[in-house]
Length: 120
Image (cartoon, rainbow, N blue to C red; front, side, top):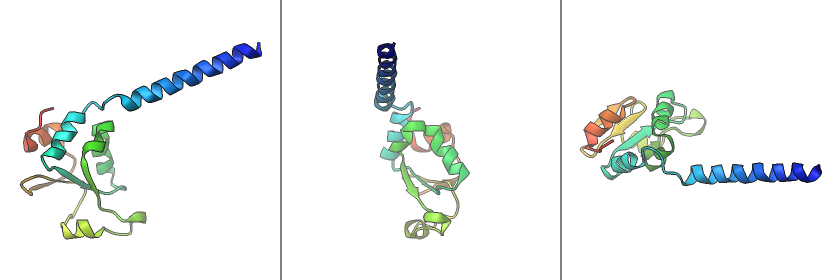
């Protein structure tokens, strides 16, 4: 009886490891789009406490790792870092594009696509 429990536990562990590895190695749905945005010099300025920034990040899912993201907030919400002050970032999220134009607020993939000519 104990042997069966050990076999079940080992099978559960192997299954868990398999799905963890699979999800890690599987590309994100928007990897190519996110890479294109970065290749086209699009940057996202945000703050860890900003709910709209969090929502914007979440739209990319695991593909967000390919976005050029600049965190503007200091720890404990203690103000804005020097880079964002120098760049005159006034609100979050702020997207900046190759032509140095900026759009504040969450942008849809369609809006980002139009601004950068990146295909969805």
